[in-house]
Length: 537
Image (cartoon, rainbow, N blue to C red; front, side):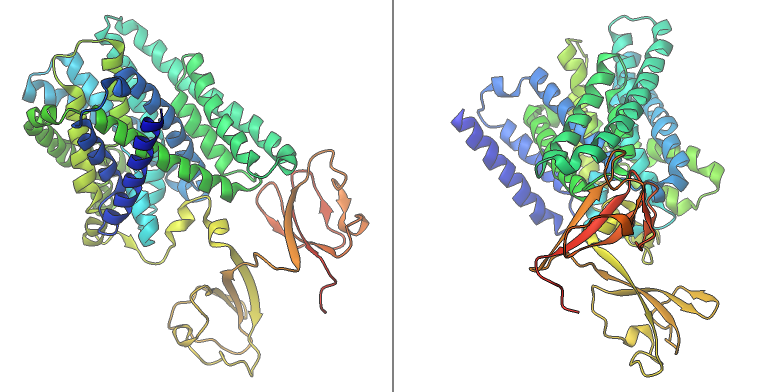
């Protein structure tokens, strides 16, 4: 046990260390996880440690959190305008990709139709982890709300590929095609129902009891919600991955306590899951088997990149008359990833005899996809003029405001102010602050570096929020239906000495500046500041 733990810890640290090193050169960290797994697989390791059934169970468990975080970290406000296109790409697009690959490998490599359909199904989904990691680290955003569409697609296309994989396994095990409609209905209907119901049940519980939890217990609570969502949907023959994604996107975009900390917690869990999956599946890969399927894997990778993926993308995007360059970039960033590898294990674990080494083909295709497509995302985006220099990439994620700890300030320019008559680019206001809006008489101006500030302008600035003081403590309270503050005016509350309510966030997300006549409603998030000593006037 001790040796196994040492081996696991060393591998984990090597993955993270080498991953960060190659990430500096624009190479996705996921690549090193898979490569280290393949190298370790060539070492004389006890084969009991890498049984396929154990690997599939671990991979399945890891994907729960990948799916949940895919929804939890997505900002619905930015993704909603492109949700329909992202949803079509994750459903119709996946089916088109799977169909194209099925036909190609049948005629090009001589696969039987059923085995060709299985390969097409497992490799039809994409993994955007490498893309989002690169964009966030370099603070690059993509034009035309492309990131929002990719978030919706990457989070919800795995459930579609999983359903197609189940259909392929059903056919390969001798099942009737008449059972397919029922399978699809169960997968979608139960998955959607369980994900939505559990999310809306968990949110009020979290709001009501979070303030009574010990520190960090809310993270354990949401962790349990993610597991329960998948397991319950799966138990009733629904799509657990779809349920986890929907539950995540609903909870992540709701007004729940400590949401930013929850996003960061599941970001860590997501990375841990990705490391485990890629390394473990690399461990299962026989390096000699990879050599035997090298040529077909390269040909298949090129077919997916140049034909199957663009075909799926443009079938969805052309009716909306989107720019061709956007479609080309979305085609390029369709990286194959962890889900494809886990799904490929399903046939092996189920005992189905395959005539071809499908797992090695999928592993090598994923390796090429991450190495080539993931590495050159930034260069391709720049070449297609798809880099958005005006919008912060962090707006696409639910932890944006809290992570950057933004606060807004309104300033009116007096005639004697040093900034009057100067352009914004000439001001020395620090990297943490930004002038985001100017009110000038009846005009509202979105400023740029050449905008000149005039007398009586009202500037709206954003900067780093107040976070810590040795003499003051900030706390947040979620008001329940039976809370003693519920439905009372602030002036009627018996507040502790040296305390002040400084902000109220309603359930709909609106922010209220509190006054004595402000009524506190159930569901409000109330922020208070308390001083140990009397504050200095």
